[in-house]
Length: 448
Image 1 (cartoon, rainbow, N blue to C red):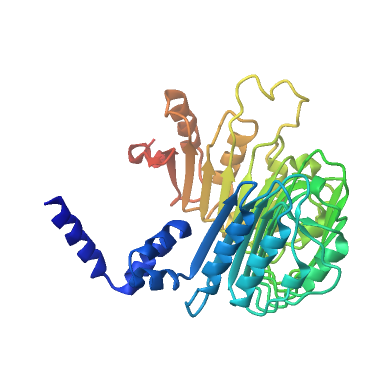
Image 2 (cartoon, one colour):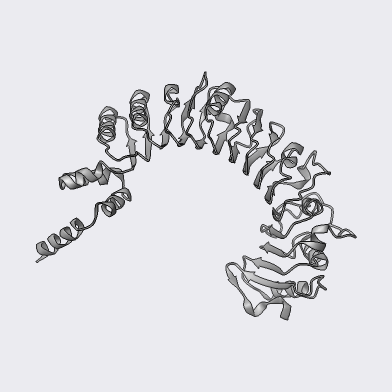
């Protein structure tokens, strides 16, 4: 009976169309998918049509056999397009020749996307410069122990996405030679460890670039690193990491920038902030607004309609007021607070208390419609005063939502009742209290 049921299930699978079976094979590890090739010629043919292949080598022996098997699979590939190849290599000794052979075969098959992860010993894997000339490659992702030594310009004319995670460059010239050969590049993501790099000036001069993410790590490293960015078509910018006396970011041209996310530990320089004046959406998460040196006072963010500001450092309200004064068309303001335990950060140097200005920025009078304050803490220095100031002056405000991540207590309710008692500039403004992901409809503050 069980045998009949097994055959029946087998027949059911056989009845499925090739397209569906190919989807099933593509959803499981490549090694397991190729194991089905022993079932029949049909399965063997389907394996040769898989558009996405992934191979992982872990160990110190058998690299030649592994390389031969991968190359055999690649050479037997019969799909119209090899969409992607993902190689994860764990080295103890140097297996650069075998790795280069596998990549070379994939490039010969006009692969569209290559992802290479290398976990090596003391020496990184030297990516073959000869392979940086591929007319069909559209996406290249290089992760971890990889060294790019590019002494002359390359040609990756179809490349649109490039991701470099903790990849090392031989020198400044290698960065320039790689990026100058990517004439169609639209997306660039760079995660760097300064301690793993000999690059002093990281130049990104890519006219076609539309999206750029820079993630710098190693806060305690004292090497000087400078970013020089010339990307006139850039629409999205994200900067994470450290900006201090040992690093700088020189942005030359970004007139089309629409969205920016700045999350830095240290200072933000004038040319960085000044390059953001065309954005419509802006997120600022800066370690301490007190470190905002050379902050321009004549910049106007005329296009800015959405501002996200993280308020986890003392005197954050100076940055908030600066942005409100500089953003006449702001419609949405989101503030994100962070918990400070009782007794922590209370005995530090006494910071100035915030005194509300005797005027209202243009955006509060004419444009601001939505205020969202995540993890609002009325007991946090300046928070209550800022909230009341906005409510008293935002004449177009429609909704003001305040959330808490802790349990809704009597103390919290009293704090929100105090907000509800504020005379609001907007008669139609609705105040809402949220606890985590639950909206407490019974605590609409308009009724308190």
